[in-house]
Length: 251
Image (cartoon, rainbow, N blue to C red; front, side, top):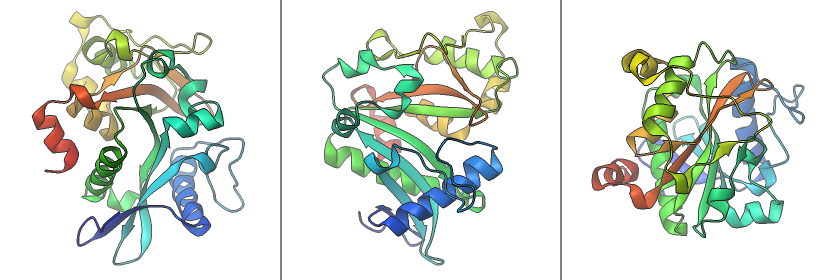
């Protein structure tokens, strides 16, 4: 992929060294900062890794001044998930409605930025790189889990209920948390919602998907290993309006 601008380069990881740099950044964010873990996490080497990494494309943002990888996104095309036998989020969500749609699917995940680059333009460049990746490969539906920090669902009652009542996916896109892990999101009645207070608790990545016309699946997943509460985001590129397309493509 071409240089994304004067400050950052966005590209796909091509070498083992680049993948390990991705895993080191993920370790710093998901393990050190947020208290997460996992079966294959290598604490000695400081690597956050799992069995899915070899099947994903890893998009990374590089600070051209320091040559450091400061942002990452993990991407799994549907045909590669078929080789693997599942999508990553299938342990948490029943994806049947998407898999039987006949549409070209892309799963997104493990997105994070180095703390020093949050609130700046790095995420904007990553999104532009993602938009180019999607356009070049003609993906139609993007989806993946996104996380709230913490596992106390009552503390997240307002934002989860706001997402359920206002942004629930239509039936043809409505994935559902697996029955054995299903955590209800409609914890507050619509008339008792405080949308402003709820939005304050919504992570920036989820807000970005909502601005693009994204939806959420039904039910949340409480991930104690990663100390998060997950929702499934779904973005149908055919449903995006012209304003949303301009935002998405960086125009």
